[in-house]
Length: 161
Image (cartoon, rainbow, N blue to C red; front, side, top):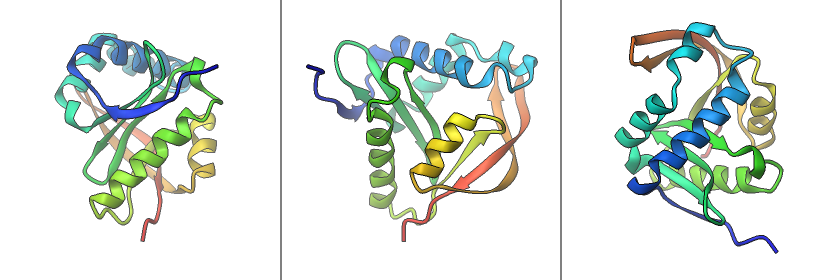
């Protein structure tokens, strides 16, 4: 029997595990659709630094030893959303999404948004199934150790009013 899934705040001691999860998820969802120069900048260490800087805004799905997924919010943006390959199709993604939306409601955010890489069809299907709607294309200013990287992305919004 699978252990119960708990959604909780991230802890400093799991930064390595979360960075590894993020790196694997990023590679799986983005390597074939994003520029190679961006892929070179998306290292495990770069993800760990970003997690550390935003630790207070990171929520983790826990269901055993290793984290199964995480979300990171920035004001009214669902900034990062990742689920490990082994946890896909288990309901973990829905639990993380429900938790993120509850936090937006608690913070009185009426129309949160997220950016999705153009061509990441699996993520786009999940967002749309979860009630988000694509509102167009925008240019995202992605932080990297080499400076800001500009990338056109799909913008999604959800109405929580």
